[in-house]
Length: 185
Image (cartoon, rainbow, N blue to C red; front, side):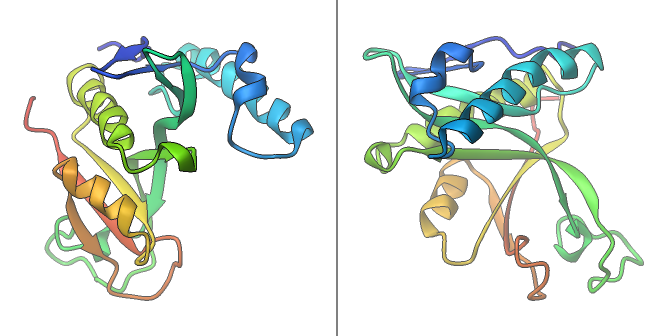
């Protein structure tokens, strides 16, 4: 099993590790001091996780291949939540109102506003799903969003995820969950 993620190419995109050369174009935050700190942490994270034999959690740059323009981020995160509240995660005897949390392999994406609505998020996320299922042999991936984030839910649907809603109002960051199971392995 290969836990190091190489650059991934799609038809229109290159999904690659960030480098310090990306500093002028990093969209994560507007404060230049925090942006540098975030980028340094992100770049160091690749080597540290690999050295610990952990999945390649963290952000990857989403770049338009033709223009070489950095347009956003996509990546894996340890997604922490009360997943047993959702029917597809619940096992016999689980209390659907339990506050107990478990980790899952989370997937996220964010694009600069001017590049949204063109299928880039779906394309980049699909490349990461392929790597997670084939190389990492992940059992499933999840993505979470808010009830009112319909564009993100649309990306989840295009990826083939089943969307489930938390039946309880808390926690506020665990509202809609997209789930995709590995059918490759």
